[in-house]
Length: 108
Image: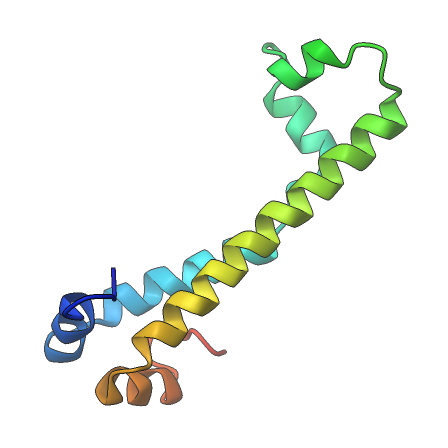
């Protein structure tokens, strides 16, 4: 999104980007939260995932450990992508200034 001519950076630096920065802040909050194993079981109570069908012989402790490892990996991946995206946006001086001023509450 920010490569090439940098059209997204140019658009965000010219226009009011408060809503965009608030969305980034919300995404970072979501990346901090991890879905608990019990919550995922309640959510998928009626439908079994394909992985669960394959691993019917897997113990509940092993399922929990696999779920927690996958959940941590996904949250870490999301955070890394968001930080790289924000770093790419900071190539523009006005956007870098907005990040420094904690525009949208991203850093707080």
